[in-house]
Image 1 (cartoon, one colour):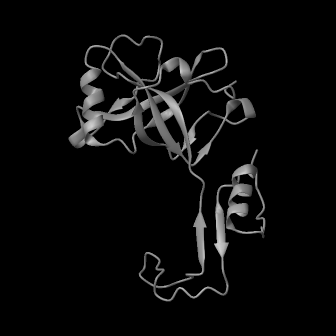
Image 2: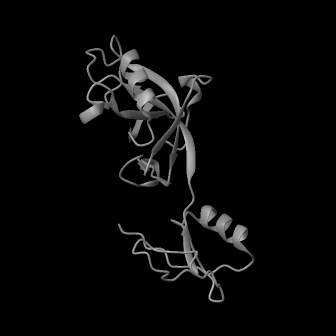
Image 3: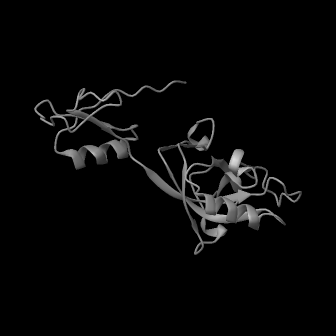
Length: 181
């Protein structure tokens, strides 16, 4: 089913409005100031100062995930999705990592893949460590939106996931999300 949410108008300040957007699960916040005078400080991609009194902001979320990389490994260790190699200069390096979280019963649940945000050094480091067996680690990932099968959605995927860092200080057992059904 298609869910359509109407636009809401908030007064009480920008911080209040942004907190309401996050709480109600809206995609983002569009701010319009009809009295704004930005002059030539705001431009669109065409280089014109078109609608400078209007801007859009979306919340960014961050969470920890179990990342798996081992597309060339014969041993799956129970992890069906294992990421993939990249293309071009990343042919022998990580193209993307498979992301998982544990449900409340400590079963691994596949979320989605992430390839954006990985720098060249991290791509090479993980691929080198995965030559003998799949690489697994805890990573921090930013995303714009989250879906849950337990809420009736078709996947547990993230929208626009972006790799931030490897958490050397966290264990796989710490990556539990009780909302996974």
